[in-house]
Length: 565
Image (cartoon, rainbow, N blue to C red; front, side, top):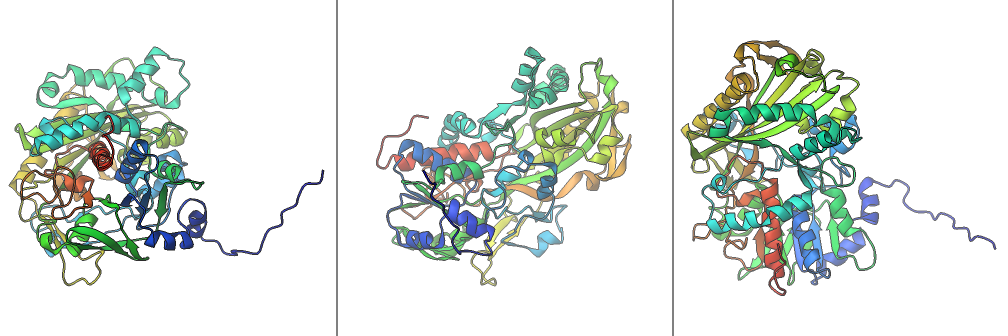
C-alpha cells in the first residue's frame, strides 16, 4: 500500500519566535482578534507569573469548563528555570533582563536618606520572575504577619498546604534525611544536601541563643516534579493552554494593558497595546506584581488614584561571605566533593514585629569547583547567593557561609511612596517610586547585620570568632580577611520584593477588601504582594500563591460551592 506523500507548502520564510509560539501555544493573530470581542470568558488574568498560574489552575480544578484569558505584556523567553538548563543560562540571572516601568524620585537616586537608591524591576517575559527566582518558600507565622487583618492571616494559613503542593515545596532537611537513610541514593540532589546540611543543622540546633531569639529551620524550596530542578511557571501554564479541542485557557503575549474602562464600578473593557479587549461578564484579576498594578489602578480609577501606592514596603539586603576551615567542624571524612546546605533564620529588632528580618544561609563545601560547576549550578539553593568561582577555588579546604539578610522596609513611612506622575504621558510607566530610609529601617538593618555576624562567629564557627574569615572586594576579585566587612561593602543599595501598594484590609482605608476586590468596583480583583498591609521579611511567593488560590475559590463560589482546601 502506497504511503501518501505530503509536500511542504510555501509559507513563512522568516519565522520569528513569537510567530512560532503563537501558532503552537499562544493565541495567533486571528485568534487574538476573536478573543478581543469574545464575551464568553469567565476570567481575564493580567500577568503570567505565580499568581496567574495559581488562579488559573485552581479555577480549572473546580470547574473544567471555566474559560480563561491570560494577558502577558512580554514575549516568551525561557521554557523553564535557568537552573534546569545548562550553566551558560546562569547569565540570565546576571544580565539586565529586568525592566523598570516607573521612574525614581531625585531624593531616592541621590541617596539623601541612606544607602538605597533603586529597586529591582520586573521580568517582562512569559512566566515572569519564575524562570530566575531563588525558590525560597518559607511559611510566615501568624506573629510574622503582624499588622494584617486576622481573617486574611487565617485564610492564607488555610491555603499554605495547597500552595506548597502546587509549587512542590520540599524541605532541604527531608532531602538530607533521605540520603542518610539510603546512602546509596543515586540522586545528585540528595547527595549534595547530605552530611554538611546535617552538621550545620546540629550547630544551629545546639545554639540556645539562636533558638531563643530567632526562628531557625532548614530551608524549603519549590522544586520541579519532573526533573528535580527549580519550579517555574511557563511549562505549567502552557500545559493548561496546550492547543487542542476544548482548550479552556487562552494566552496572549506582547499585550500590555494600559487602562481599564469601567462604568458604575463594572470593568467593561481593557485598552491594551494590541487593541481594546471586551471584558463582558468576566472577572478581571490583576496578577502583575506589586508596582505595575498600582500604575494601572492610578490610570483607570480616579477615585482612588491618590491612595494607590501611598503605602510601600520592600526588603533591603545585606550580603556577607565568610568561611571557616572544614576541619573546625570535626570529622568531615564523609563529606563528598560537593556538599551544600540551606537554612532560614528569622528574627526581629528588639522583639518588635514591625522590624522583621531574616537570614538566608547558604553553605558550600566544594573540593573541585570546575568539575562540580554543572551540579552546583543545577542544585544550588539560591544561585544568586552562591560563592563565586574565585571564592571557591581558594577555599577547597574550607566551608563557605553566604549570609543574605532581608529586612523589612517600614510600611508606615509616609516619605516612601509610589505616586502617579502626570508629566509622563505613557500610561504604563507614569508612576514615580520614592524610598526613604527612616530610623525604624536603620534599627532593623543594624539588628539584622549584628545577628548575621553573631551567627557566623558564635554559632557556625565551633572554635570561635578568630577562625572566621570574610570576603572583601568584588565577588569576582577580592581576598579573605579576618576583619568584618564594612557597611558599604555588605549592604546593597537596592530593594527586592516590593509590596503593599494596594493593601488588603477590612476597613474603609483599605484599597482591597478581604475578598480581594478593588474598592469601588464589582469585578476587579487583585492578587500578589501588592496586597501586603506590611512587608514582613519572609519571601513572599508561598503566601502570594495561597491567597491567589483563595481568590480562585471565592470567584468559583459565585456560581458553585467552595472547593475544599
